[in-house]
Amino acid sequence: MRAPLSLLPLVLDNVVFEAGARRIIDGISLMLERGPRTIILGPNGAGKSVLLRLCHGLLQPTSGRVVWNAPELPGGARRQAMVFQRPVMLRRSARRNVTYALKLAGIAGAECEQRASEALRRVGLDALGHRHARTLSGGEQQRLALARVWALRPEILFLDEPTASLDPGATHEVERVIAAMHAAGTKIVMVTHNLGQAQRLADEILFIHDGRLAERTAAADFFRKPATAEAAAYLEGESPWRPSAAA
Image (cartoon, rainbow, N blue to C red; front, side, top):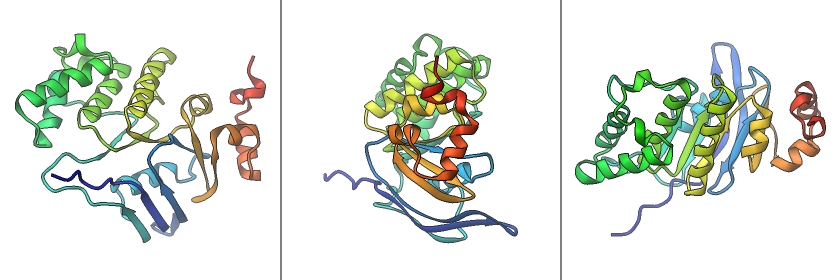
């Protein structure tokens, strides 16, 4: 049997999203390809999270197109996923949170149990699989959300501020998992307000300003010398995170 075509690249063609009289996304065109970790930055209200939801399919554009290279296969595991700032935990054990997601995707029996064990081990929760998911700490719950996704082996993962409410230690653990998923071949597209995190994780930056894609560039170039006045002003406002300001 031939392997299914890759979902990627994902193409956004002049995408507009309006809510009432407000244009939140204003004519964004871009292509997301396999490989580099893509971090989306921009000021509050720029449209970053809305852009992520348009890519994932939770929102439909007012105009323009969001087009995958190939469709999802009916009856199988979805090959793209999204993890939010506050993950929803099912009323069951950590392990059963993972196996439930696998069974919904049509993966059962020995393969389901093997994938669940592997995913929990990869995120460092193998010893907590028996614990009720809602009794885990915030950082552990976020890693469990990532385990549920990783068990499904997605091609692309969208992350919306996954560490915004976590302490530095928990943030480090979540970043470790994200980096490991990237190394295993999953395309990472993430929104963050944490510029230090962006520097640690990004290969490329999408800078969104007033609903427009103001800049797309390699992460090192963005932080060293942004190409637009809007990006420079944004970084200046967050100057404690800039490399030149590091102790």
